[in-house]
Length: 329
Image (cartoon, rainbow, N blue to C red; front, side):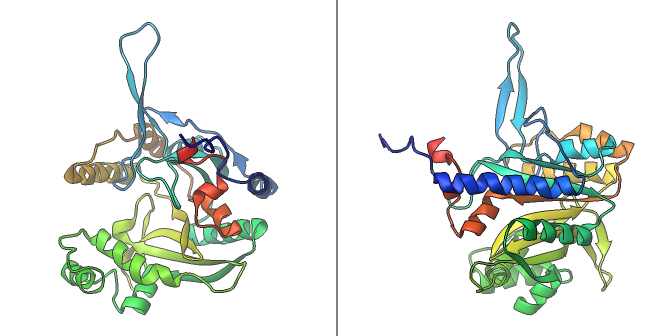
């Protein structure tokens, strides 16, 4: 037995800096009248995202033989949207979320997420808000703001919105790995982006958090964002991702308001999970009902606090910024 595992994985000085960061984030939102909310960590429903695995458990009422399946939330998103539909106005959540499957390096099964929603903003407005927040807590500099298609055309000489599935698959085979055959369109795009685009989203300037906002993702990557037409008339997702020094830090959306579309997307994600042989989680009908009641026009974003502190402290190991990482929990 390793006798040193009782010790914290982060230094006390780092934990002091972590506490200061959380205070500064709360101060930013307090100054702008954004309400901090708490949502259930344990839910009867789960995310149906094809790329995210939930932790499952059971609630067993004392004195009864029945039990109820429950899930640790992977994001406070659904509950926060129900609050927005109830008239909460601008809100944020700063707390723990849980995702099964990965530990080590940049990932811990339990991590801290900052998620917020601003009424009356779209994805472009929210990028400004994200940049303002980061400037208030770190030495952040926005380097570039560009579309997903611009980056593909710059580094791969193809338009991701119009290239055929056949040509896209051939591009993956030629540039990534010839053994990769029969991949779905989004998987091909992700591979090409991670190999040929993402490495360029960084700066060599020391002690600076260099930010690159990438927006207008392909329509097939819409997730929970609404769809728009770009300047070329192609449908794109009204969402963005922020990369800081080559690391994905935040993911934002101009939120989908249509309950029927949201329901269809939930069912589509469940079908993808079924085809891949994954466990099919129950989707949140309460969130669908809330959207049917009506959600204000808004934009929302999720930002990883542990990754942000890793960038501030220039470390590549998430354990360095956690009191106790998964190996010591």
